[in-house]
Length: 219
Image (tube, rainbow, N blue to C red; front, side):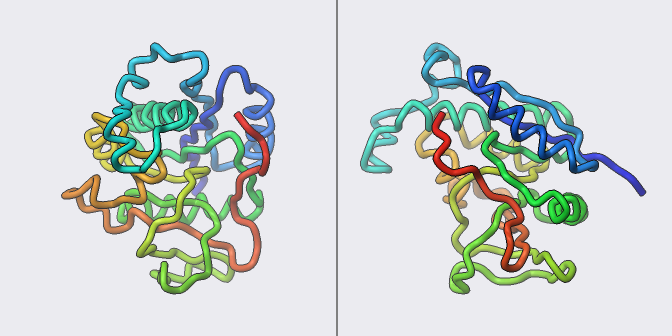
């Protein structure tokens, strides 16, 4: 049975070439229904309401430094994507615009993620470290991909699938921006007591690139 998954590419308006590059490759994945989400550009949108959620004193106390503007904009942009997920009332895939995928493999990843998202709530769709102390296999899905549970969630949010329930939880726990957004996700105790047992599940194509990010492309 054919289906499509609503997919959001977060991209800044002044970086249209990045969106077009990501869109070009993702359009080859027939299961994706792609939409652009204009990200919060910290250099141009200092008065955006979400930028005011940054608590500099608390951020410094918790991280040993102040946030760079791009980190606040990134958090704000993912916040908007979570709001979109709630508005649509369905699981969606969220991409950052520096994503790179293996199209043939990622087509199957979308299928697998769709089958597991309700039980997981949040599935990270990027390659993972082979350090066994940080993860364990939950299920071998096919000859190429494995569902993995992380003891320590990796950083970066280049691609992930999320349910409205988890998106709502992230929003409720983001009344103040106290960490970079990927550190917020990694620190699972910040969004308890919700049942996010599979928060750090994601897929890996053994030995090859499933999904990665383009290097050395600054905002």
